Length: 218
Length: 108
Image (cartoon, each protein chain N blue to C red):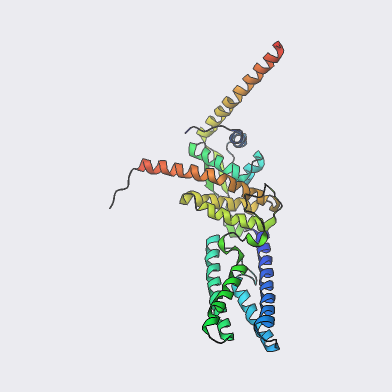
């Protein structure tokens, strides 16, 4: 749909996964384990497998089927990653009670760090404000636009069902055709006009329901 | 609720009135009016609620066209008449005010 954004997202994921593998290997070899070649290969292998599993469409991503489905998929992936990490760490160390919080804690921390945009923002890693607090600048590139795209999806949920779906579909249609340079400003304009639109749509919906009259049971 | 004919609304109506039979989609309209798409959308929605504008989704196969369907807008028959009258009315006070100002500056 938006190839520029997809490419940038994938690059971001590659960087995150690479960083995760390198960091895990260094931590495992230097701090947790005694330095030995067999441990290095094991750690790197396990971390690579986990990183690939956790970062979803890393190898040849096939586009984005939709924000809600994507978020659900990501949550499942992160859950699997935490479980997998817990088992591996528990297996590496003696299964004593004092290791359990560590075995659970490390995958949770790593999952939170690597899954960046799980909570609909992903802004933490970029050191940026929300889409609306950037003083009208257009130079935030496709990544910023991707974050605001997610905000569009969230905002559409505040509107009455069909109205929200139509608004989002129309925004998606328009944004897919607009030049990448103007995409950020266009998304921002959609977000800025959203509060008024939400009020307008609900007011209309309320009038419509009032005209229909109270619902009768049965 | 009556439609307030703000400058933005006038721009959208003017763009649609240029060729009332022609259908325009959001991006086309925003390029023609110079308005951001997010600004044009609520205006189009209000015009649609007032019955001035009708809209429809483009009937295409998005995979074949490699883009999502567009939503096309066009003035309804009644809407074109009403929009023309409303635009004329919106312009009139401005002309009167200008003439009055010109008169005042002439007498001063």
